[in-house]
Image (cartoon, rainbow, N blue to C red):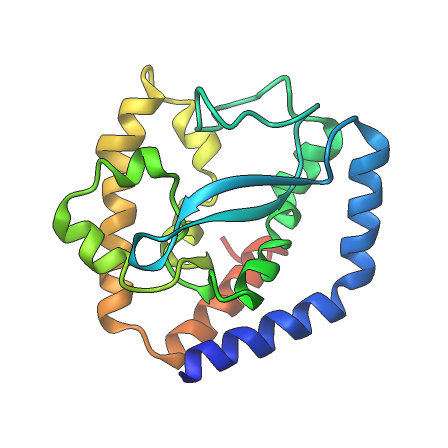
Length: 200
């Protein structure tokens, strides 16, 4: 209960404080390239419930909801402004809406698309889907440069499924088993420092 109250208050305050930035970015996305302001994609949430995540659109036109899901290396469809949004992680800020709605938490495992959740073991699903997915978390901090990392592999899709995703799931499981409010505060601070390039 405390975590949900913390999430709601924190996300609501974040949306209010960041509203000038969010409105400015929304206008820029709409003006600089054709397409919707937000990219909505189905992710799997707590107890396996699907929901649509909010992100600022970073590609030209409507970002695909089928075909390759992973972003690997330099994608020519990503707009110059979209590159900035992805690099700065500003494209993720609209997920504060998902937090307010109760679909996500501020800290937790990153929500995955159905295609990859289907590949999880029963044990992985049981623990990772026992909590709300998060805007940030230990796995997302460690793999913040996932796009560049995947580009190093000859078969990025297989590398993600067999190496990166498995390590992410192990990190998330450890977080869920041991997390407390102090851990969440530390991860929020670490995320801010990483985004500001104060910490690596």
